[in-house]
Image (cartoon, rainbow, N blue to C red; front, side):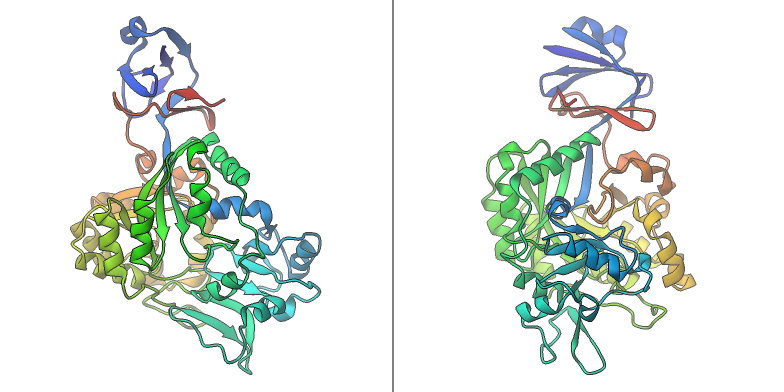
Length: 460
């Protein structure tokens, strides 16, 4: 059956108001008058038809794991955090933001008394965690434990760990909780992908680990995704968070049947602004300039990912980290398969280098809203001028790709689009519909998604 969808307009096609679907493909784009004769049925719709969107940076396992966690996003003091864990059997707490707490700081193990089981609180950025005394004991973290490479353990004046761990040191605690904190179930993962489809996302670049899960839980995140490959309602490009070239090759060669394909490698060059671990060229108000966290084999990982048909996607928030990633990308030849994730602070010189190297900027429009006060309070005037230069990037010819970084931000992209300042922000998430392309479409009526088609099948 050929269905003709007639809307008020078609995004990216001025003068057109109709799309002809033939099974899983788009068979025509034009006007109702021109295409109606080729259709078995005509459906009149209110609103604008746009392509199915791609979220280019999302952590689906972590998003699904919220269901098994204590939600700390609304916590307003240490007492409410403790109450949340006392009224739950969860091991994990997610969404912690010390700026919302009455105490104005991260809690420590000494603040988390009254809970007689291991627990772990993840800061909303995912780069900092807090364990209670039971978790520190389980992990064997004590005064003599050294800081791991590319990570730090906060300590009190006596050298005793406070429970706060940063960057790679987070894995000291998450590794210890393997088997204690449950991973999301297949049903929870499928429900998460279903909610993405509801807001018009039909493909994701899913970041998943082969080692200790990025937001805790047990088992390999990639294996959890493999288990639902044939039931996935949307397409998944699997970007592997690892420091092992062997892991990249293993994932690329062993993907299951279904909607998952190899997407590339995810690396980290620094941390987060809120956690004071993003690598800056000037100091934070309380001292320090963050840290560079690139693995020594980053060049080999990047080349391998691209050779396998994927991208090399490297997290860089601070301007110093962006410069380090550009050095890395220059060493492997540049090109659009090399992506800077976030690119939050970019100097004029780095902007030019990005354009000259032809690298892609994978950015998060929602950060423009959520980081506004943080940037004002945290950065020097020179660094503030570097923040979220989406318009400058577009003007320089840098390819922009949009994502949510969920669960750090809400996965729905719609509310943040107008914040970008771009003339056509939707182009970060989709290309205009084409004849012969897959029949993934979204109907927007005003501010609402009212219908989604995946492979030509209406989902509501």
